[in-house]
Amino acid sequence: MAWDPAPRTKCGAGKQNGKGLTSDWDRCPRNVELDLGGKRGQQCEPDHEYSGVHRGPRDNNLNNRFGWIRDLHGSSGSDFRCSPSPVVPINALMRLIRHSIRFTIAACVLVVMAGPASAGSAPGGLVPGPARQPTNHPSQSFGWDLGNLRIPAIGLEETVRAGVDLSVLDRGVGHWAGTSLPGTEGNVVLAGHRTTWSRPFEDLDDLDVGDIVYMSDSWGVEFMYKVTETIIVEPTDMWITYDHENPTLTLFACHPKGSADFRIVVVADLISSLPMG
Image 1 (cartoon, rainbow, N blue to C red):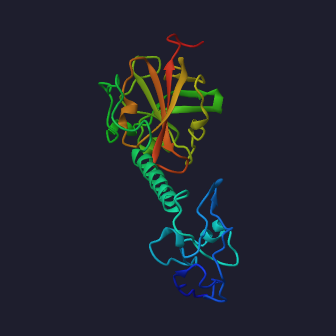
Image 2: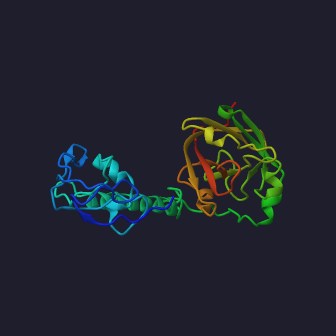
């Protein structure tokens, strides 16, 4: 339904009923006040200008751009707006709301641009191991049995194979070539799928700080690690494979499930330097 511009007029000249000015009335309704949050605005007085509240955008006046302004005035028979109130400046209120929305949107954009809190350059104290190999090195596809991984907290027990090439990970858990072996100094780095093939790291996000991880070497000698943290990083954050100051075990996989946008990384410290059992 189309709306017609309501003429601007003086109080007492006519009455707005949504279809134009109708019957004349003698005075501006003195008993109607603008009441917002317990604060009252200025009453209409004779000879003050008013204008009908429109159903659509009329001009740049924010007071007339929203149909709910009429309800705020509490007027049902005559839609009008009193002259600007020094007590309740609606324009200032609308500007405050508008700036608040802009600030919220800007904050959200900054958070999205920032990405994971742990993303970025390598934290202090992390250095790549001297034997660590790049992902395209031939040793990443060797695939021979290197040991065994056991995590009781998530019911995992898997063979660990040499390399992190997809041909290896499609068979289970892979060991990043050139990173440390279990029970030794440096960082033992293991990778696995979460939702494809045997998906050994499907429940990696269920691990809590303090959970125990067991890993054995190719001779069956088992060592014990304790989870210290879980972080989310960018796929380009290769520093997760670097050596820590203490002997560590790092497990990583794609994150979230079904997506390769990020990486979930679980870090565990060696707590048993002697073979288990």
